[in-house]
Image 1 (cartoon, helix red, strand yellow):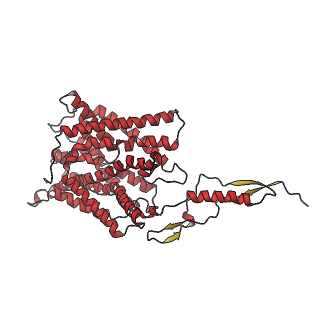
Image 2 (cartoon, rainbow, N blue to C red; image 1 turned 30 degrees about the vertical axis):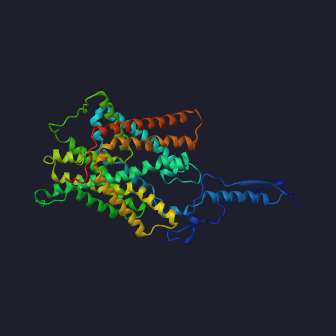
Image 3 (tube, rainbow, N blue to C red; image 1 turned 60 degrees about the vertical axis):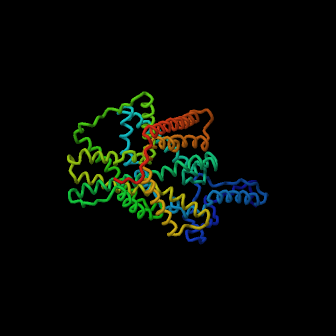
Length: 470
């Protein structure tokens, strides 16, 4: 009889058969997750156990049971994610991500940068712009790396990542206010610039044929808000991918048209390219800090709140005022129409985090998904609240630098701290020093830019103007 070896190798299949976890569908029913869509941890190698002959198979089964429990833990699902706009649909792809990023990061923020350059000048303006670009590019890389830094855990929201790094309560306090404000503040500003641009577009197209009683600026704001509310009925992030594509294309197109049309014309006589002079050294310092806050805020992609400080549409109004007789009316009208399309699509991408927060609060309390009427009600309410704030409180323009300073840590400081606290690089290594220094430098800049913003607010008188439509 053939002699048996003292040990034998027992191999476990690469994909063990486990019962698929149940998830709650948006309708509230339980259904097994299809096996083909179940998430499989790619970082785990199939376990192989070496067991001496004569020992019971119980030891192997215990090891197998522990492995399956670990896998089951890693694939644990949160039913609420299937009900919320940001995580409701999982059919996105790299193209959708590109559309959203281009729509959020390219285009309208360029309209406000000339305000910063007016105080910084060309040399310092370009230098600060370059430094801010590479800094935010690095922190963006950090956020991408931390998206799935913990095996089996995906952080779908900035606040969730902040909680993982700083703790449940502190993370909410540090991240929730600036991220929600950035979304809501930008949506409010988009209503203002979108409505103002619609008014300019109407003036160009209509020309001398305009009626004797044209719509006021506030009424154009209301028209734009209504269009935004209609488009906001699209349910989730993936459903607005087409709008983001339109926003990305229009942003690139009109940004190019704005600077090409501007440099192709002669400089108007009263316009100077020299930095604005200040009455004192302290005023110059505060003005520069406020301008740097504008640059930092622009790179977050939510800088349109500062566009309010230009009472008539900023660079677009300047293009219309100085070159409406030099540039063909059709090109000028097309530029403004592209801006309107971009603002409509940008409103959706920037408002999605606020919609998500509204619905997260509702589903947490009711333990059920939002009905179509509840979801629609939230978005109508949000749209008109943004309209009211933008019209009733135009003094927010004087807070531009302050808001830039307050929200700067979200982009430039927090990601560096998150990297150290989650990735835990070797203490006192270059990576450790680099991120700590960069993070605290961001906090210092935040304080300095906020001080510049406060000075700008006080220096401007803080004149309140309620409902004085032009």
